[in-house]
Length: 116
Image 1 (cartoon, one colour):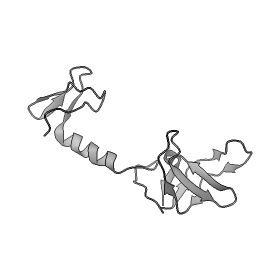
Image 2 (image 1 turned 90 degrees about the vertical axis):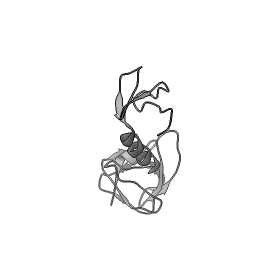
Image 3 (image 1 turned 60 degrees about the vertical axis):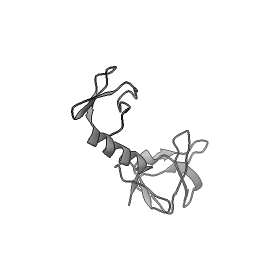
Image 4 (image 1 turned 45 degrees about the vertical axis):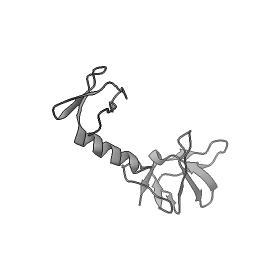
């Protein structure tokens, strides 16, 4: 185990180990080192859909709710299947680039889709 570990709740660097648990003196959060290792692997998985499934380039997804398109009167209906997605890093949360039949190229947030 590393000598210094950050608190997963408040990201404090002052966490200390007490037997099998890690303790944060700032927020009082306690966690096990094994749970922290599982959280690290979950973060390494990348972009996840609304159900928590990992997404990859080329996957097919289904939109889970009606989405209004900004600047247009069009709507992407819930249940629309989107094929061949591309993952991207975006500061605004729109981390999926895709092309939807009848609408065209657009970006989606992964929280509004589920993997097929």
